[in-house]
Image 1 (tube, rainbow, N blue to C red):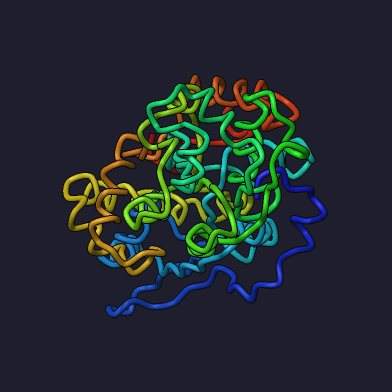
Image 2 (image 1 turned 120 degrees about the vertical axis):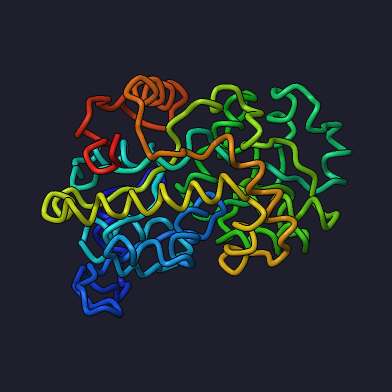
Length: 342
């Protein structure tokens, strides 16, 4: 998804997603229909809990969650108005703005740390002589010559992998083979069958690979293994700016529901794990709870954006070549606290 070109954004979508409409709740009151697109992830636990617990309905929303394999489709759905919310990387949003696409704005902070977790074939890691205790520079350098799995070209998994390679003084085009595999389940299967030597994705699948013995975690994102990414505006809920302006109460209701659900997730991650397991690529509740426990330091509890954190993140993304420009840190350019109660 990251690094999209505007033509791709406008041309990819072929999803038959409904536009916002109104239905009725059991008591006859109207519900605003909201379509949300996402790639399944544990950091979306608050959304899944809000769905399961009826919290969205309590806020007057009828939320349909459409799961994707590519974030490209989510961005396209927002731009076209076919979906009202999508989880999106902050660097994606900045890149879209660079390319002249300013119809989207981030309204609810999700993750304040890059949660990508790099997992490698244990035999390859031994041959390279690296473990998670190795200096981070050595872990980056161990990627040389490997087959590295990513979800899709230009996606976050691709862009941050290329950053690791560049940090090791390597050329991503020449010194490793980057292979587009697909979603978390596909990456996990490719690792198990030896099609790739390593990949990175937000948990749980990297933890699954390690638990099953065909992977070893070298970089744990939720634990803050990469200091540069440990305090960072990483992912949030984005919406179509025009839709939010036309439907401010629905936008606020969505954020309130997420915050209510997030209180439950934080209070009892074990119970939350049971509720979200059917949305994950692995049905091992223990792995899901391990993932949620690991994610807790990275998850926003209130959806608020800190202007200083936004500024620092935009500068970092530009410095490490994730974005071509530094980006505008001012409120309403890329983000707003107008709908999250902050």
